[in-house]
Length: 207
Ligand SMILES: Nc1ncnc2c1ncn2[C@@H]1O[C@H](COP(=O)(O)OP(=O)(O)O)[C@@H](O)[C@H]1O
Ligand SMILES: [Mg+2]
Image 1 (tube, rainbow, N blue to C red):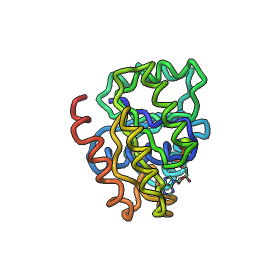
Image 2 (cartoon, helix red, strand yellow; image 1 turned 60 degrees about the vertical axis):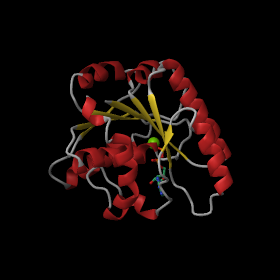
Image 3 (cartoon, helix red, strand yellow; image 1 turned 90 degrees about the horizontal axis):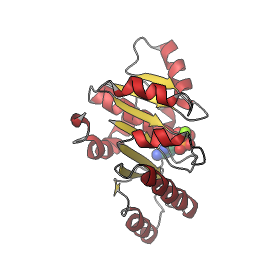
Image 4 (cartoon, rainbow, N blue to C red; image 1 turned 120 degrees about the vertical axis):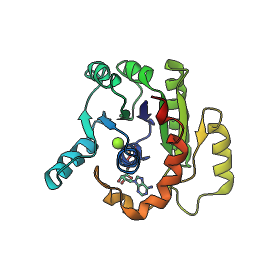
């Protein structure tokens, strides 16, 4: 299974959800995982290198990559039965993305309920689906504050549901800062487990 974490919008939680998914699948579910870090900031790779210094055994590998190196990396990982989780850069204007988009079985697309995020979310999804019509799309409302308006939520959900499923909401919480590539803070488990169970339960075991 190749799973992209993408949205054209920055700061919606692509890198965070990649790490949370990696931790969930490997540590909680015992599934082999490879993370491919294609974010320009390489935030996951940096976290991973730091964590490796402090701990002994890494639960999964994090491979830094860019659009040029992806095709070779894809050949390597597609021979394995790992869940391959790809943290994407927040852009759409590079032909190098085409093989990445084509490789995907699933898009996990974090978003929040504001106008600019909505536009980027739809644009990203439309472009991905054009390149790869068979990809499944799951939207995760992330960093959601308690005061978000119900009318806006239902309007946005209705629009997005034309492209894919929408999971339960992940709230805005300070403890996301304590996330590492080796450990998800215990206080976050009740928030994220229902979301990941819904996404991964019947998907993983196919491939
Ligand atoms: N649910 C959340 N609650 C609070 N902070 C969050 C949440 N999800 C992500 N963050 C924080 O938001 C910032 C942006 O997240 P990040 O995953 O780097 O976004 P992206 O990769 O889409 O640019 C990070 O500081 C991250 O810790
Ligand atoms: Mg990122």
